[in-house]
Image 1 (cartoon, helix red, strand yellow):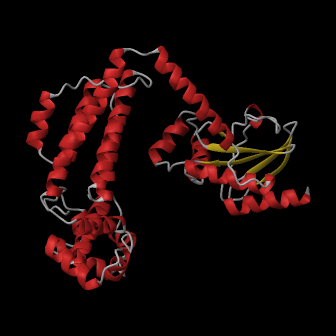
Image 2 (cartoon, helix red, strand yellow; image 1 turned 90 degrees about the horizontal axis):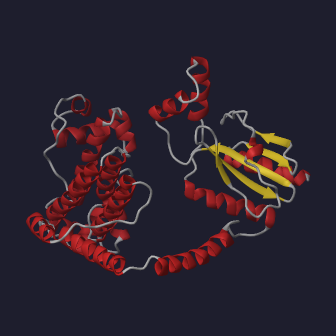
Image 3 (cartoon, one colour; image 1 turned 45 degrees about the vertical axis):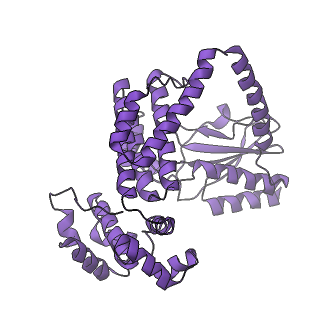
Length: 400
């Protein structure tokens, strides 16, 4: 048992997560904490399951939606946490606190608690469970892996039964029409022809009834997100800049989440379709080869790093001279000029978001601030600070 507690301490030190150790009677046997993560005096008994229980919740939430992970080993129950699966901004933190208290001192304490919560993406939880399962049980599978496969089998039966029970000719036709409608929509957007988009969609019925998932508005929002995902995936496959496409997609998804009226959902959906068609038109008019499009995507994904010509050439298995020649011929800019232009456009966004010029310089991995300053002024005609506080928020200049 001593070795057991040594292992628990090691997990705590590596993960920085507080760890509560309970016995099968739900009595606290040990607690590992540090000054890096605060804890609240939760009563975990209502969340805990017996160590031998086949149905463990694995994850449960606290009053602020912070997450705790449960893992059982023999007669011991481990609770790891708290942590969060996404970053909290100041508004979200204050909103969560205000649902609990208005006491200023208590607010400050809870604010410190939330600010210090470590972030583990939801997908990482599976890996943590695999690690724990391997350490304690010698099994390198996720503890709920078998349950997932069993659930798939159950879902296959449910889907088959639902199809039989709910079968009507209208549903069959609707599903076929839904596929036809989406395929036609993607084809029109891919061509980048706004006039053709308008004419052909006018000839095509828009009577798409998505499967219900919650209330009507939530259903339409979900379907719009599916359309956005398909438009984004198609744009990236055709060679459009990955970073810009994800920003565009996320912009419209964020707009959707603030909507409370069905008409507004339709408005956002149609606006996004037009927007994707427009950028595809602008992109196709450049008539770049697939090679140059791939180079552009690579540059877009590495704007926050130092990008060297040799790195790009090695990535695509070409000589530096071939890279320079093809890129210059198709884009009209040298590779270095293009990288600098993209970085400066990114710098503009970061400056507008509130980062200081010095922070922007470091974020974009410039050699030093002087280099960033000179490059920024060369492309914009003003210093980073002057640009940040200028009143002209719209840049007419476009970049591929």
